[in-house]
Amino acid sequence: MVGVSRRNFPEDVAETLTPLADVTYLSPSDAGYIDALGESDAVIVGTGRVDGAFLARAPRLKIVARFGVGYDSVDVEACTARGVYVTHTPGVLSGAVADLTWALILSLIRKIPLADPFVRSKWAQRREPFPFGADLEGKTLGLIGLGRIGAEVAKRSQGFGVKLIYYDVVRRPELEKTLGAEFADLDELLRRSDIVSLHVPLLPSTRHLIGEREFGLMKPTALLINTSRGSVVDQRALIRALEEGEIGGAGLDVFEEEPLPLGDDLIRFENVVLTPHIGSATVETRRRMALVCAENVRAVLKGEHPPNLVPEQRDVSF
Ligand code: NAD
Image 1: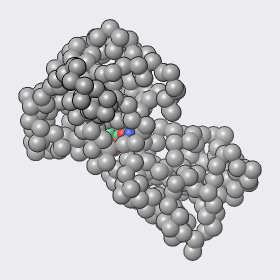
Image 2: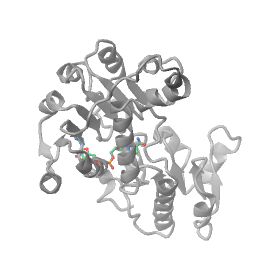
Image 3: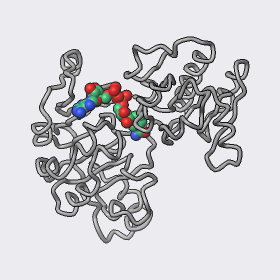
């Protein structure tokens, strides 16, 4: 049995697995959830937690296929100890997340979310002018994490005339050459950037990577863009930095708590643009992600090695 715990996973893609196994859609609120999990040889999961307790309810499980590239919600160590493969969907969503990153940058710098309601209400009354935005040309874009998504953001920067700098735990000499990206250490990047954009995975080493100290280093006009994971930023420190004018604004697709609670302090800032974790949410990208999940599940059901194991399992074979 294959358990799909993602409501909008395309049925026609799920059906491609039926020659090998029955497919059932799982939701923790369904009456038959525990039984179905108990019978599952494979699960396709969204952002729900997969930990020791989950594994204990799924004794037959051979693969956790994560619908997405970030797998901080999956306890990989516990899966490895149980002989369960963990796969993800690297690469196929990088372009969509990079597009959204640029959408947030452009929205903030040209005040698009304020401009739209202005046209619908105040413009025709000619009482107040719309405030100026800023040019991108000549600004410095600092990318923290120059992996698959960071590199796509960097590629898209080429037409805007920005100076590109990056910080990563791994140097990318190829991209330094082809994209003119300059390496900088974290503090230097924060001091120099007009726009700081985050593209690291959520790991113990990146949790609250950007907090009070880091906001203190940024320019008072700098924009922070986060399309990685909410907890890479200390959200309380971000709110304080916005209140005190330590930075110029923020564009956020991800939050420490999702959905972002109504009434959250972030909602009151005009210089903050918010999107509901939609980095990969395009028709084409979501379909590609579903196909990759199915491919990984199919391989394991056939007794083969799945093609998209997470890096921690690259050398394992169960
Ligand atoms: P990737 O592994 O290709 O790139 C991550 C980069 O971060 C790597 O170059 C790595 O060396 C670097 N890195 C790791 N730890 C670091 C540290 N402590 N300091 C500096 N750099 C560090 O991953 P990717 O495919 O580019 O995805 C990045 C993340 O984006 C995912 O892990 C996920 O959390 C997030 N994401 C969000 C959405 C969304 O909907 N908003 C969609 C997809 C992915």
